[in-house]
Length: 169
Image 1 (cartoon, rainbow, N blue to C red):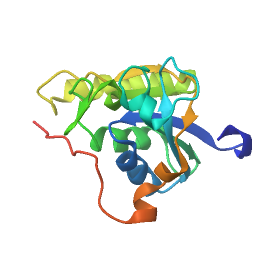
Image 2 (image 1 turned 120 degrees about the vertical axis):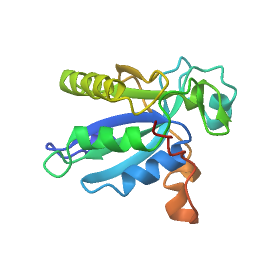
Image 3 (image 1 turned 60 degrees about the horizontal axis):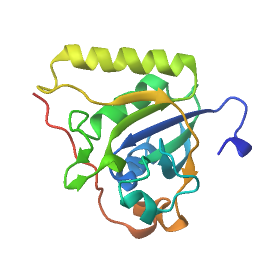
């Protein structure tokens, strides 16, 4: 996604379960200019969906977002991220189980790392969730674009969303 990126645009990468739902939530967020679903955080180069579904590659289903920081802040993107999944379940979102469905923030800059860590700490202190937040915050690694049929899945095919709204405590 970097190749065509306007100089004032930034990247953000999030994993929060099934990438179809998280992409749809971010695609509808004002200031997000493009989204791409794919795989990141694992060992296998150029993984396929079938590879990642084995739960043996270490990759997570993720979405990479190009956004305009003059229209939407990274903090707002984090608010969307926290609201669309349960960050307290290890390697699971709803019925989807496996490390490919883990909760992860992949930061692209030191500023994103700092903001993400502060956001997670504030959420933990808020008492919104009764269980500990297990979201990983890691440097962005190589992002492998998923197969074309996964891109903007809900927009192309209609339908709802596969993300699970977390229960607030």
